Length: 105
Image 1 (tube, rainbow, N blue to C red):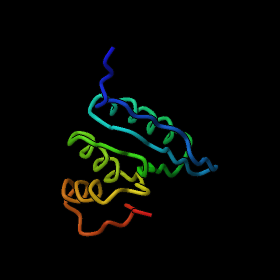
Image 2 (cartoon, helix red, strand yellow):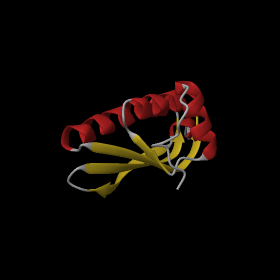
Image 3 (cartoon, rainbow, N blue to C red):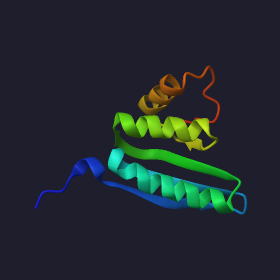
């Protein structure tokens, strides 16, 4: 049996406070994963003022996922521990002058 490695990802709540929630995304994030991640973000936004995606464990990303993360950043989702290659795609996709809100730490 062969597994499709392009869609192997996980998302877990890594931090939860009354006004904020951090989702840790790990593994390979592709187009197939985006609807599930979007649903998780939507649920988090219902109960929390701030939503953060921790991308420190993302190992592979396709262009659709990069555009998705760029759009999430554009609408106010904070990106934490964002690898340099992802940050470059996001900044290019949304054409911003500032990377404030996109952290590599």
